[in-house]
Length: 225
Ligand SMILES: Nc1ncnc2c1ncn2[C@@H]1O[C@H](COP(=O)(O)OP(=O)(O)OP(=O)(O)O)[C@@H](O)[C@H]1O
Image (tube, rainbow, N blue to C red; front, side, top):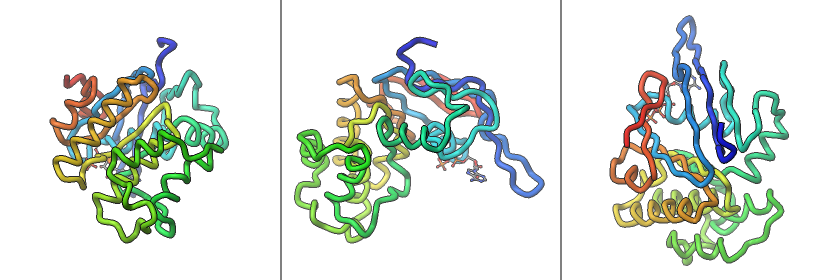
């Protein structure tokens, strides 16, 4: 494995048990993602894209195989190791946004900063401006439209400049223009080399903003570039 690998999955298997039935979702799945790279993860509905994201974020355990994150084998990680990774190195844009509804936009974006003991900074101002959130900072997130909430979720995920961004269809609620602006932002941050992006998308147009494209079929990843 090259030293620069940020994410490495080696022969990963994941099944879900539903009553007497076992559903294999990932089967000897392999992935190497370099620091600062960007990958569009495509595949049919139900093929396991969100499951793969959840495994990398530590929200789902794998059944067998090896997951290495930033050079560390995660098999022995305790909850505190996962928390450390999530706070300091990971940003996630969930399909359902998962915003903190009692809080306003600024507080949502600042939340990961407080966990990482960081302050609001120029990067946060840049994100707010680029994502068109400047006029919304004092609004409660529950009162926002789906597209506005999605842009808050993206700003929150990027606020602490994570080494890895996992984004599950982050433009699904946006109009074409806003969607392109978000994709350009994601392409830019990977060009700058500090943040790697794993993007789940059904859109070929969004996928084209990423450096490479992979398709999940029968539990394995194939080059779809
Ligand atoms: N917690 C769970 N318990 C049982 N089965 C699950 C669970 N999570 C996912 N699955 C099953 O795993 C399979 C893959 O689901 P997943 O959500 O990863 O697919 P996806 O590729 O992200 O789909 P979509 O494009 O529709 O979002 C599906 O058959 C789903 O029903």
